Image (cartoon, rainbow, N blue to C red; front, top):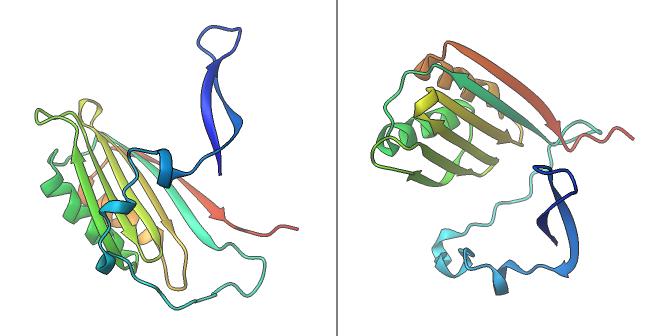
Length: 171
């Protein structure tokens, strides 16, 4: 894996990511590395399941923006909501994490590690905005059902939803 760093070009305010030739090893250098924190019973090995029979997409990645949402700004509210959305998609939740950025409504991030990939919610309460990211890969997965569940619960005034086929072989 190559490490990226930002540098500023001649035009002020334009920042681009450029690759360095340095080899990056998260195990040795990254203080945020969580590998030492994982217990042996926190990891599982799944049997191989190849569901692709052609050059079709390996997975579906749905990015959704929800504006003017109605929700309680807390991890206690948002985490079960995200788990219910993943369950609606037919996903298996392996692990969850939530972080409240400030106790006075500074936003919350919820992350779910799924057997089939991931789901995340990021809130900006000052804008009544929620950004949703659902990536699933596997037979029977439906990230659209997760999005529908979240729309029902968060009641956004308007949305923008993008669907990206991941791993499609168009050769």
